[in-house]
Length: 277
Image 1 (spheres, helix red, strand yellow):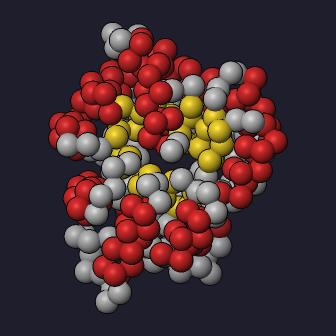
Image 2 (image 1 turned 120 degrees about the horizontal axis):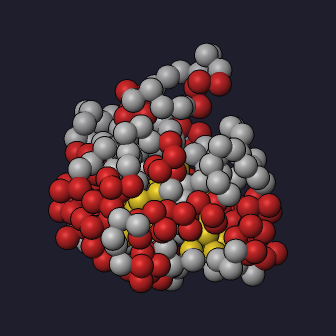
């Protein structure tokens, strides 16, 4: 299996294990690799070190939150030029995160400004924001990297997909679109999958998303068709170890009548083809 979404320590919040410990768990479970994600720093260097020491395909990227300068072409170029494969649009600092009362870096210290980030069409952008977005997308296209929607709103996800497609980006991943943010319906997800977007479902949703059920996730999986990507989004102390989390997600969806071979592909071949060149 290949997990496109896992968190590890060091981080600004508690994690179930450090980078090397999480990597060992994947190796012991027979995984071929994983994507290391952090909300507030680039994981490219950390991932490269793990890949060298373990022999697994471990890759990183950068999330365009405030700590990275927001939608920042310089941060994107640095990440991609040093081997990064994933660019996440705002997650913890997206305006949806604040409105849904989900955790943010500013929660750790009241002296930090609680400003949020958005892309058109939700808010009127500052003068240079469109230019920054365009350059970020061009850099992703140039490096044939993966553009992930992060925690953008439904309208922003659609807008970003259209922008990405117009610039030749073929690796476009809807980050857990059925999660609280952005909260897309199976019908909305299916529309984007039909025109080329990949669709992520995470094991995290099984244990931590209010109101989500195995039946609900199965409906999303069916809407995604062959663009389905299964991931753990694990690393929390109150979640299973990441490899087991992804295995449990596959088993849970299989219990909803989905084809086991298709689910295995969604946790292995499909994410590998999406992420790796």
